[in-house]
Length: 342
Image (cartoon, rainbow, N blue to C red):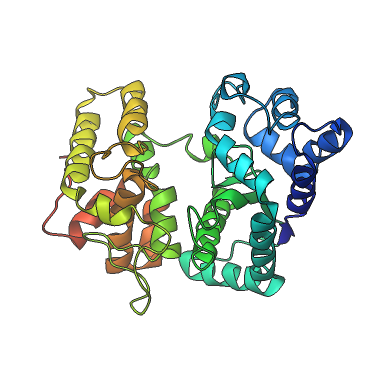
């Protein structure tokens, strides 16, 4: 795997020289045309880099109401990260130090070791030698994600979203997503023959399996993989979500019953995922923002307990044939029983 972090020092160098407003537009354009910032621009669907030029050329003096929208889907991203960028420009050394620690941690040996650790999460090897590990001072809102043939980490989030000690587990999590992506290829083609029930269940695999095998997640039913390691590394919301397991189970079970009866639409299911399973503000009375949402914890419960009871081969049988997960889940747990088609 290739480590790509060379855009960070050149951005820091640019920020350290811009005391009020930058006049070196050519330097800024060179940074924004760096392959890693172009990678970000593609991922966020930016039609042009003009909003970034307008923002970074006036970073120190721009008023909040003048900050441009980033793109249609993430209009407020630059406004929401403005304080971080101001902090970075006023104290670039803090971020240089963070960059050096990340660079030291993510040596070839570490990346190779992380890739090797994931071998126990898959029934056959999934090569990642051609993949990239990208880190930037990101203009986008996401801390970590997989896109194209790489995983991305926002340097701003390190020591804020996760500690340096937790970072390898976060990288493992994203590498797991990348391996799943390589395993299934095109998502639409892979799920083309899925029934509505298959597709509903399958949507819980990605985050559920990633936290099971990479973050040592432990829920109400699903047990941590490594008994000697602490549970829920880098996933601080899981204890909160565990308290709501019965609620999550009830919604999941009600939905599969409605799918059996044919009285739920694909649009209603999509809205359920948006409003509930992916909602980071769901329990704002307990925690203002969920770093992980219910799709993580319930995916771990559903597929994690199947792995605990039956092992990797059965787990991936359910991965390829998601409806099978219902009967295997019921065999693994007697306290909670999912509705099965009669």
